[in-house]
Length: 395
Ligand code: SAH
Image (cartoon, rainbow, N blue to C red; front, top):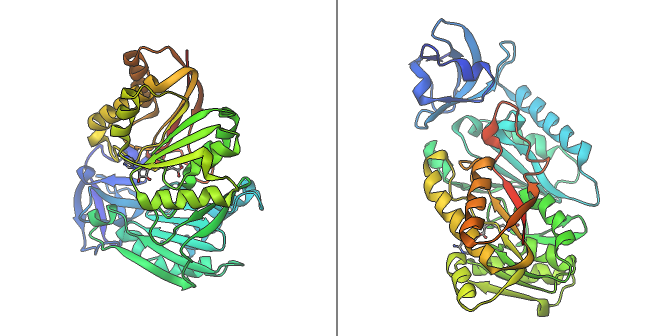
């Protein structure tokens, strides 16, 4: 078996079961592994540490499949991990209440490079690493053997594939292709999700529990929903009796689906306005016009995918949070998120605190929010925690 031999003293993170082997920790590659091939990870003293997949062009040079010398990397390993990920979801998913969730969350479910999202009878598969590429067919076989599957669709169209030397891939993997919008159920709300071309795999499944919290915060409120996408928070706000929601979003396509999503949930358009605009600019316009709100939601895209872009990201978060604080009436709520893996929760809280200070408002945090149970974080893989949110009360 080809192997990666680590530099002296660089074996600690592997021993602690962190699933990534960085380029900088590798002393040399032995044998001639092809991209995605299984390699042994060895210490500088020739001890066997783990079995991993090899990604020659990536800074994450290898991703670990197993730390158990007796466990072979093959179809059985994929099946075991799949069944265990599925079993974990069975324990908390309430049938009839939620039918869209993440079934496989990559490293945190022991399947690096593999994401599987369920949308009712459809599954969306995303493969992001060279190592995972080899197991596409096995995965589809496992998924397709479940009851009630109408189709499996691939959305391997993410930038990270480029870093692995992989091309974009989308299309039907099994069964039927999904319709333009697949209707999903979420705690009594319904949403149409575009699995073929929507963002992520079609819907922000990771915000489910935060959307569930929102109705309890917005009764009678004037709400500003920034970065609204297909109206997840807008619909949740209206279902909680919000007086009016202004949704700001740069994608016209997303706003068109948002409008449909309101109708799906029985809301007339007269309590909702979708505005296609840049949030950074729109927040300034609203401020200049002296407008104010009871609740402002900020759910921006990732400003910092990795720690390298943290400073720039911090400025972006500070800017929008400061403006949002200025738009809030006394007693109002800021519901603010960051999904940047590179911005840690403590830093995010500091940025929001600095924004409140500069906006001249007194605020207190009343809820700390995060990602749901179907987006678990492996104990040794803190990088898996990316979504954090704060609910702050002003005045
Ligand atoms: N809150 C949504 C998810 C938001 S994702 C939900 O729960 O479903 C971030 C959204 O911000 C995307 O829809 C993206 O199109 C939009 N976006 C990105 N940059 C933007 C900008 N500068 N101004 C307005 N919208 C932006």
